[in-house]
Length: 381
Image (cartoon, rainbow, N blue to C red; front, side, top):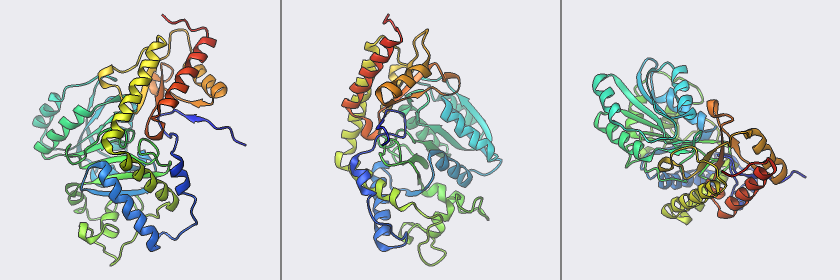
């Protein structure tokens, strides 16, 4: 019998038992009307969570799959892109853009701190040929969220008529991401984080502005992952779909039972209510940060930018992050994450998103962390 671990990592996370039960259905054909109804219902529920009237696409993959599909669909090789980064996942976004031939202007801001958006306006004034702006909303690698910045950049993107692409992989469903209000043309997330589903689905919202840019291309860039195929073969005509085959046809086959799980997860979100859900995440994050500070540990990002879905703290001098994580796993059955890149052994990251944003999970994790630190002879300063 496998041991039961408590997933306090920044994804994947613990899952509501209702989501697990939703998968306990018989196999079904992906074009059966019953499944199509559930798929369409899930799209509509996601539209409410994204707070958008834009199209929603769900397909097999992860957050990175969603970003790469979005880049190859909506950004042409050689096209000028303003890429803003505040950490590892912003850097990964840039690497994907680079692989697909984008001509990059990069703004790299200090990790874990707010930044001013005036420089963005200046760059757009200087280079009129920049077509798109990209950013990560919730930088999971540092536990920092940039809601005010994304809101401001969305306004700038609209004023300068630029396409705006946002990675909301670890924030959507746990923090407010009003896609239409923030003028986000392409918003990318995945099923296994704050939305509360299971790993395996990329989820992307696409504005009509983005579609109109992509539809002008004469050829596909990927047989399976060029998102324009969804516009051509799946999206309903009443929503602007082209249905070139005369009927709705999936560009790639959907994992039926992951859709069942996501359908239940979206219902759970909307039953709780977006405002209540965001408030719960904020309260649990604050409780986690307070517990960490009470142990004499230091939160990594500035408190003003601290994320509601993931908390990062500095590994105390003289201790090894990997050793702390291993003891949490081996002695307390709790899974947390280390830092990434230059922060690899300098910080520890704790996820509290979706079902895991639970005060009892936070208390259990804090008690276990205190026990591990005690055994490692940590002395609170």
